[in-house]
Length: 140
Image (cartoon, rainbow, N blue to C red; front, side, top):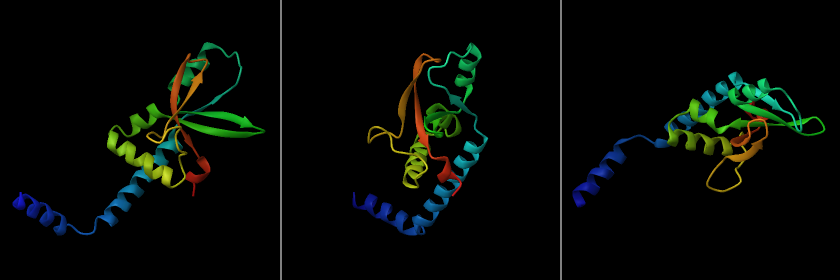
C-alpha cells in the first residue's frame, strides 16, 4: 500500500501545475462551442399557431429554438441533442456545461444535478430537453 501511494505522489509531483492546462482546455472548449452555436440553425417557435406539417419537420431538424417571451424579447433554447451531437463524450459535455454556466453563457437548470430544462412543443407532440442560452454573453 505504501509503495502504491509513493508511486501516485511521484506521478503527481512530476507534472507541472495543472491549472494552466485546465484553463486552456476550458477556453478551447468554449471557443469550439461558440463556433458551433454560430453555425447552428435556430427556428422560431410560435405560440398557438396552426402552421403546416413542414414546420414540424423544421423543428425536428433544428439545433435550437427561439421563443418569444414578452414585448419583442426572445429566449434562445439550445436542444440537448444538438450538444450531444457536437460533444459526444459525456464527461466533456458535463464539464463544458459547468464552464458555460460559470461564465454566464448557460442558465442553470431546474434542478441542481442538471443544466437542462424541458418544454412541451405541440407541433412535435413531445417534451424536448434544452439549455437556456444567453446569446449576448457569447459575443463577449
